[in-house]
Length: 134
Image 1 (tube, one colour):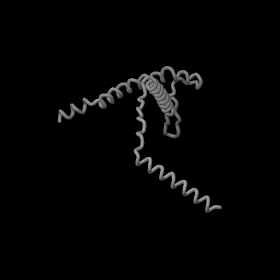
Image 2 (cartoon, helix red, strand yellow):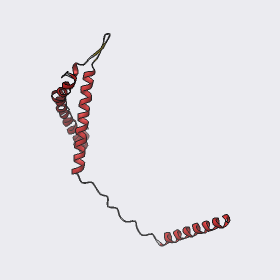
Image 3 (cartoon, helix red, strand yellow):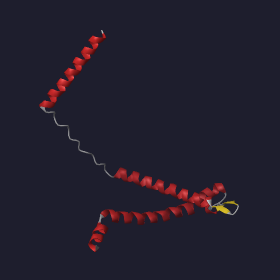
Image 4 (cartoon, helix red, strand yellow):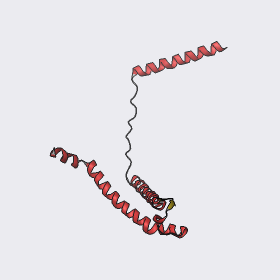
């Protein structure tokens, strides 16, 4: 069982996934800081409030913290845009795998004869149709 676990962990996919999760969480912290310390103050210039998380709608006893939701949406948009730019840059840098399309093999004699027969039958059918219309 230990050997199977060792084999499982040694697979590239598991290690790649672990690295992706670690980098993703660090990246999320950076984007959260960017939103909190740079984007929110810019938005605050127009809205009059620097901290969007303080925006709350109160109805009766319920408190709807839509400012936190707006922060989450801004974080998502920034992360999605940066990931888009990264994927675009990687696709530009990485060469695309061109499939070496081999030319179609030359048809054998039987195929050539059958094709000619098909074309002759088609011609004959068209000729018959034209005569019947006249």
